[in-house]
Amino acid sequence: MAFLERHRITLRLDQLLMLTIVFIVLGAVAFGLGMESGRHLTVKALTTAAKRAEAKQAEEKKSLEKALVTVEVEAVQAAPAAGRAIPAVIDLKNQAENGKYTIQLVTYLTRQSAEQQIQRLKNQGLEGFVVPRGQYLLVCVNAFETRNEASRLLTELKSKGIAPSDAYIRAFPA
Image (cartoon, rainbow, N blue to C red):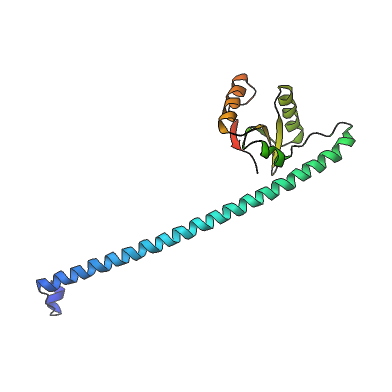
């Protein structure tokens, strides 16, 4: 009150109430505008994130196709020199048509280790294949239409000791 008395400002009760109501309304308007602005920013951020995810997925698909071609070329070039048959390279496009899910067993850095694992799977009557991911080679087994089918086989493989405990079901690489 000292400030008001010093500057000779007097407020009646009705003026004080009106001033309080004006501040409340201004606060509500500012809050509403902030909420609307925040909503627009959130929608914009989500749209941007979705576009980035689509671009990344398309880039990974191109990378995978390029890696598949590279692996096929390397396999064809290496086979005659080694005096052995050309190792089967999985055609991911055809395999993906057979199912939406696969079981990822292990990851290797060398092609030789991955091929040895695939041979062990073949000896067990399973269809193994390699999915190149950058410097890594993912060894997967079979293609499944449903996650339940894959889950049943994964449980069976783990109980038989064929699959390691950290093997998991994943969407089929596109």
